[in-house]
Image (cartoon, rainbow, N blue to C red; front, side, top):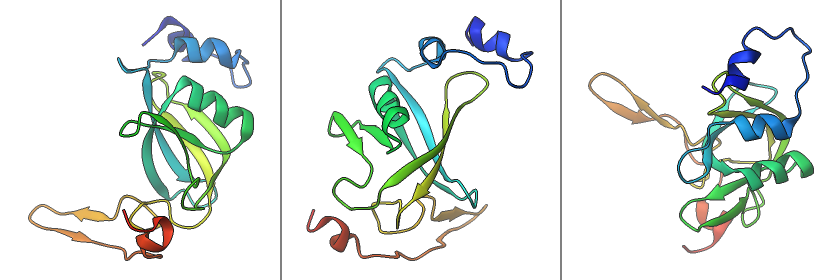
Length: 146
């Protein structure tokens, strides 16, 4: 944990810091990325986890449209750019260690590339796991043939 986040542990509610300074103090991984959890702002439903680099986070904060970093494509991934399933930013929070983001979003349609509302659809039990939700949309309709 950086000193800046340590100081925030005892900060009074309403304390203000420059976003730039907190992003400087955030704990980006060796690839310059930070995990970002997207949660539907009004229901609390956890939709997905993706990665952001600083440029993607700054774009998201500036535009209100969520942009992640695609590790597989090595470029910005503006959620909904090809599928139309856009995420609008409502809130953004860093956790107490400055190493994870929680994004409150307004999700348009499914969040998952499988066509499901959430990427978290495989429920684990002690002995078995099961798929607990069906796709809302056929992924081929979202993306065409992959």
